[in-house]
Length: 217
Image 1 (cartoon, rainbow, N blue to C red):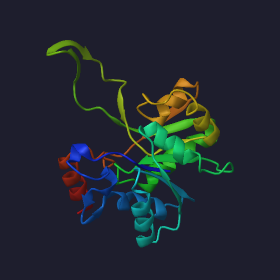
Image 2 (cartoon, rainbow, N blue to C red):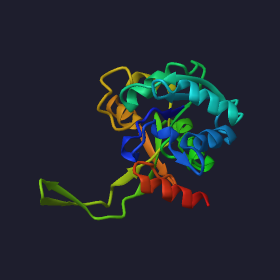
Image 3 (cartoon, rainbow, N blue to C red):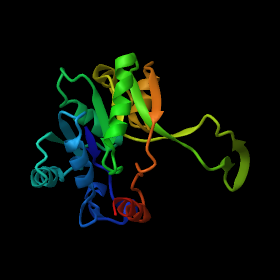
Image 4 (cartoon, rainbow, N blue to C red):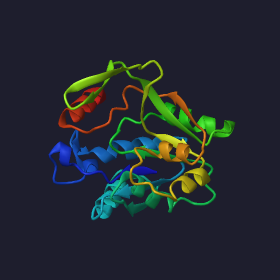
């Protein structure tokens, strides 16, 4: 599933982030095309911002993305958008991959890496990259602690889960969850980390779009 309901306010947009311009077309187009081309993906459910369902459908048609089987209305939070999309995933699905349209450079190898552990007894898998910077905890303007980063990582998407485990995790209080993995973990699920990809940048600020465009050049 592809979560594309995020607002574009921090990008200075009057439209959802998924429709920010990336090399002359919507940001969403890059993820749709890459998931469409993936041998790991059988079907795609897109969670769109309210009122933007039809543009997502039209974009999918323009891209000839036949794997896009449904576009649903996203929720007020990311987790609610995931839950809305998951409701449209068939009960026969062997696995579910959750990806954010804000990370357009999704790679087929990463999709394969997050799916593999589900066949080894894990409830979920997430791609991670090392945290290179020194981390400090602050209160107000004061540094109160230097945090040991030796066992810290930054988490990306796509994330893969056993569908039933993700459904159970999404059944409770979900609004404060930073990602799907945290919900599965809180529900007692076992989630493993696999190598991520430095190119999986998350578009949040205008300069992020420039970085992604440079990587596509």
